Length: 142
Image (cartoon, rainbow, N blue to C red):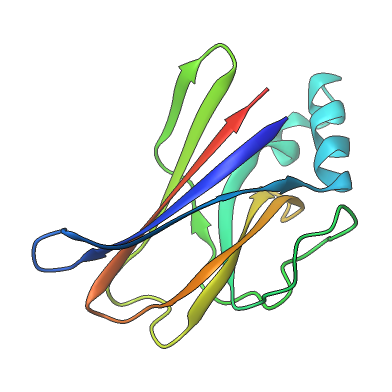
């Protein structure tokens, strides 16, 4: 399983692209455990990836990570979810103009509905202000 996160900062006034970063993620050990248990029908409602979390941490992801290094609020519900092919899904989330302002974001993570970290990525940082909406698009492929 591999994935790529694309982060875009869009101007609030016209949605023009101001900044973009693309980074490959790392599926963490507990993410593979969640996947195996989901495939085995072990409490599937808590194993499903439903959220993206963002943070200010800069440490490179490690397979044993269980949280983001420096998570911030809010954690966002993933919507929409698009099934691109039999082997790929795209998960999207947004930070709106009035959310997370003043934070320089360097990391993101995918969480299950039980708040278990499945994947983590770091990217070149960008400071969130009310002038921008951030659009996160996470592509997962098997």
